[in-house]
Image 1 (cartoon, protein in one colour):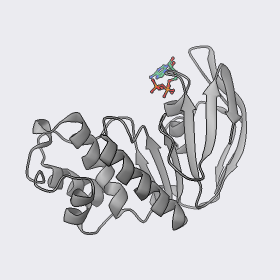
Image 2: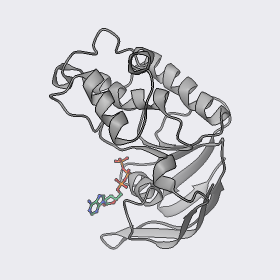
Image 3: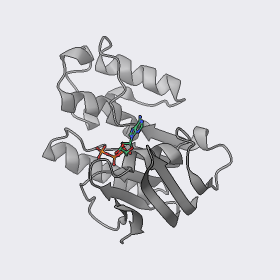
Length: 199
Ligand SMILES: Nc1ncnc2c1ncn2[C@@H]1O[C@H](COP(=O)(O)OP(=O)(O)OP(=O)(O)O)[C@@H](O)[C@H]1O
């Protein structure tokens, strides 16, 4: 689904990574690790077409990637004045997603909070609003920047299960985090200007 060949990127004259060559296939889960500032977010932004300053090749074997892509960025990307349900409805409408919003909110533990403005929710609950989209998604590629941030243990377990289930149905999942999803996960580590596929 994705081929990276000799991919390299630098910012402010500092090489984040170079010589990155790998292939990612349908049904795989890829974890991208590295210290703060190593370039994880930058790499994800290259993958989804939001950062164009790189060398090498980043090629998707999907003709209309934007229609098949679910990208959750570093920030929850929600509107504080809208409720959990309104935020989810808005995000789904924007991204051509549909489905049972209440079930998705239940899956992320927000049932009972659906009418509460996001401004009145905790950091973890705000993250859960964004994550609820995963339970509604039929996209073939998920690119997730730090999806586990601010999530408690129960939330971590259900997100693990969600990612595994999606991969089992053929979705390619690429995410940044220090948290390792159980099961078979490929890992790409960024450090010292190098990118290494370590598992
Ligand atoms: N908007 C920007 N303009 C210029 N340089 C930037 C910008 N954002 C990030 N950088 C540079 O790119 C480097 C990599 O940033 P990036 O956000 O990709 O790292 P990261 O591995 O995701 O870090 P973290 O774990 O802290 O989220 C940073 O060290 C910084 O020097």
